[in-house]
Image (tube, rainbow, N blue to C red; front, side, top):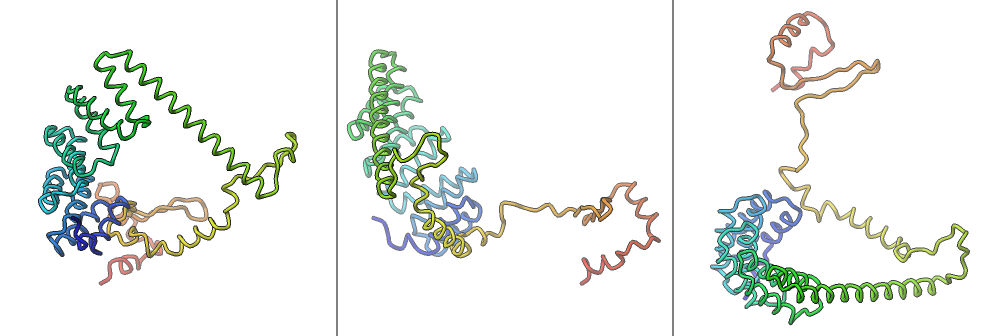
Length: 300
C-alpha cells in the first residue's frame, strides 16, 4: 500500500524537474528527497528514472531495486524494472519475471501485455508470446495494436491464413472506427452551425466566406487561458530555478560591426599564438580608447 509520505513536497518538486526533462537537476532533487526520507519508495522510483534517463544504468538499477525492497506490491515499480531491462536487452529472464509480477498486481494496462508478448517473441518463445497477446485480447478484443502483434506472431509461426484473417479484422475495425469518427465530426459541425445560425445552403461555393471552425468559437477563452498561463509561468515552471540551463552561451568573445561596417571584437580569453603576440606588442603605444578595460573587468 502506498504511503502518504511518498508524495511529500521534496518528491513532487523532483518529479517537476524530471517531467520538464531536467534529468540532472531531478537526480539531485531526488537525492534530497531520499536524504529527507530514505524509506520513501516513490522517491527511489523517481531517482531511478532520472538516472536511467542519463544512461547511468548501474545506479538506476540499484535505485529501482531499492524501491521494490521498500514496496514489493507496487506494480509500477515492477513495470519500471521490466521495461528498463527490456529496452536495454539485458537480463531477459528477470525482465519477463518483472512483467509477470506487475501484471499479477495490475493487469489493466494493455501496453504492458504487448511489451511482454514482444519480449517473448524476441527470445524465440512464440508460444508464450501468442498466449500473452491472446490473454490481452480477451480484455481488449478490438484493440488494433494487440491484433497487430497477434498477426505478426502468427506470421512468425508461418500460420499465414490465420494471420490474414487477423489482418482483415484489423482493417474492418479501423474502417468502423473511422466511420464513427466521421459521423461524430459531422454531428459536431451541424450542431455548431445550428448554434451560430449558419446553414450550409446559406453559402455559395464561389464565395470566400467560410463557416467558422469549432475551435474558433472559444478563442476568447483560449486567449484568457494563455494569458493566465503566462502570468503563472514563473511560479509553476521549474526551469527558471535550474542552476544549469540547457542553452549555454559561448562567451569566449564578443564580436560586432561599427557604424562604418568594420568588424570589431573583444577576446576575453586572449590569444596565445605568436602572430597575436606580435600584433599586441606593436599596438601597445596606440591609444585605442579602451585604457580602462582591464580595470573594468578585472579590478578587485
